[in-house]
Length: 349
Image (tube, rainbow, N blue to C red):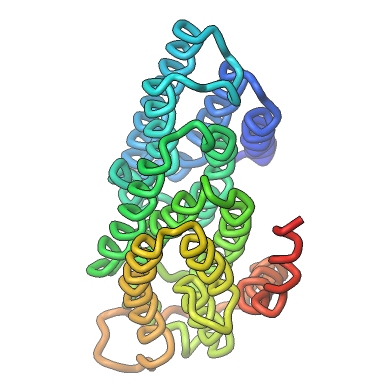
């Protein structure tokens, strides 16, 4: 893609998100979401591959549906209650419709079916943008509207997303689909705690972005798209393979890695709020996710090439990729747990 065109598209992507962040009016927020969607469509379709075009079409249709639902809900609220402000969303029909529309935009269960298919058709770099940056604007709206949404609906969507995210990834062999189901599960954890402690939701979102970025960049560096090709990583770069395994365990939420922090604090907060059953169910669904992360770790570190795998050994060429962002993000994805007391003190302010 022409660098000037790419610069304009990435700038529009940033503009759409910032516009949604800064808006207090539903029409302005909707415009930001639309700019965001229209800016990423050419980036997704730049490969000119049938799978990429199919993924782009699916993404466009789901995002357009969600945007139309948001517009319908905000218009309904303005018609019935006389308010266009995001904070003044008060009619039950409008709040429920907005919640479902934002769930569709984010890929939360039960409207998650588009996300694994779309991510499977994209390059890893575009998939990284879709899994991280594209979640920010809808989450900003969800945090603002959370106080008016039925808490039972939020908890139900959160628990269902953690369950679907864990269950859906169990039988996958494509790494992009596995990361899509991982995304659904992590978003479920964030929605689960959204109404009780929004600051914890922001903490979880930040750590999710760090860990997912590290996972995507590691796969891009290894040029791995399936579990079979992942098994050749140890021969190419043992250090990177070992760090990738630790990043995956961090995504699974194992101590003493960074990913344990949000899960620990969320379970603690749910117990404080008198929801021990929800906390138990969330912890049990996390075990499902942990299983497929361990599967990837096994392929990375315990399946040493040459072996009976069908994957061919890649050529060893001079490495030209910039690895500084990967190094920084990987350090953050692995070593932030000791900062938990400082984080909890900041959240208490």
